[in-house]
Image (cartoon, rainbow, N blue to C red; front, side, top):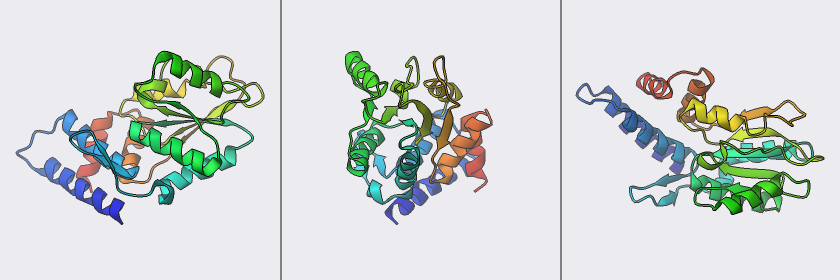
Length: 220
């Protein structure tokens, strides 16, 4: 498929870089390559001019289908917070959720004003508001309390894309695991590629994410 071809090309380039004895591997280099693999895993790639190019229909990708299956399972019991790293992914998810479920989710994305974020948060934290909040990690991972409504609570969180820092992950997890939460909170990770699995594994093991990624890629 188009997604697989793009992924294999970038991964091959990454392996060549890491195994070249004359190349000094920097954190920036590793993260740059992993970001490209992560983008491809979500159906797009961002060029050097910061323009996103779709390489697949998201609604036809198993990764998105897995998320929609999870949302269907939770429907009627728990609202859900979905974290993604890229603004492009946030836009894709918001549009896809409206098409699939018939409602517009609450959204946190970069560039929003504080009053806009407050309005989205208030809607999500009400019983009458949407069952889903789609949040860019850089915007929604800190300070916000996101417990849903009194009769429609939120005790579910899904990481559709992860960041590379454990502290960001922990802060995100605390958005609905805090004072006022009456239920155990469930966390879900969705991964569709080795690159995403390596990030999740490093975060779970609380290890140096970049080192874990380099070791994993070198072993392929």
